[in-house]
Image (cartoon, rainbow, N blue to C red; front, side, top):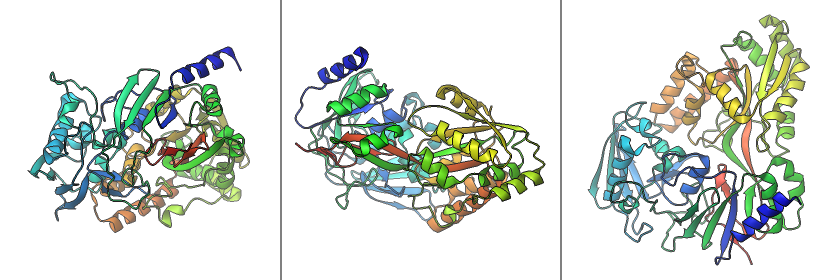
Length: 514
């Protein structure tokens, strides 16, 4: 073991004193803040979900159910939402949750001075504006919006919004600055030693929402089963591996390359869990060569998607050409459709398109936790078999992201973080590319369908919109969706429960056996 690695392991050990029952988990980078929905990133969202809760939250399959609310009702015109709060919910400082706390929290979020990440989603900048939030009585909250929305409840529960987590007024200092998050979640904010660790402590008075005894997204059984959670900031994969094998760490994400080693490890278990994120090839539909849908369809037909996914995911993924996650409530029979592997058909499409061997470059990165590079290599070989002149350019991840955001690419092999409601995924890819070059597809019909899905509240009608969207995507092929992202974690065999959900730790209903 190198001196640097040994020193890192010693540091972890010294930083992890005994604290009753405790789970120590690695994070690959520090959080950005502890202020829900403000100055956030994925790691920040993953920590905050343990501390705060919103009125509603997503299940594993993306359905939105009550969380702090016991129930909610929507007016016939879709403009008024009435939430009845659960009895007996307390903040971490012991004060009871009331409707006034909800009103105060939303007033704070909607104040531009707060710099809430989701302000533009609720102030009318996009489609929805919260017109008012009022307390009808101590346990009833009424929220009125400006126009019907099929995505309003889903928007409230988004990680980027800090889950619209309801806070105690005591979270704010007397001078109006943010002190620390005092929420209602299963764990309380503990200590943050920047660039080293974050601790969360068990909230003894926590009571889960109605459930069947099992964790389910953010709304199932949420019992805190350990006294403390410690999240160590360890960006080095070798140090994480050493920490897991030494027993200093109880759980962490691991690169897929370690799957064979951990599958039969004597003291560690392998945890593989799908999430709503997507691995895909972006296509630049404004490119001279790729502006022809026939060329894009040929590229898709050249791929033996099952073989590609099996190899790129180390056998953990399942091929899916849909934007919608395969375990979503909206993943229908139509969503299972994909362009079949057919090299002959691919060659015919290229011939009809007048393709003359022009070069096509796939930009990839070599991060170990995503399939960007291996997927590109496999796709290159398959596409070359049908006459496509495919090259690979390897960039660091930050530069690759900059190229995508600027629209400066032909094809990009990339992974995209989870989004619960399909319409949030659509909005990440679809829209006016002249205004936002990071978008993948600006087909007028696709934009029309996306906008319709935002407004439509009937689930059957929404399904029809999503299915029509998928059929259109298969005809136009603005991108090739490969498979849902997969969380790959290593953990001690003493750990019971599933410590990861949607790419981040979920440490309720998780325990350590002696």
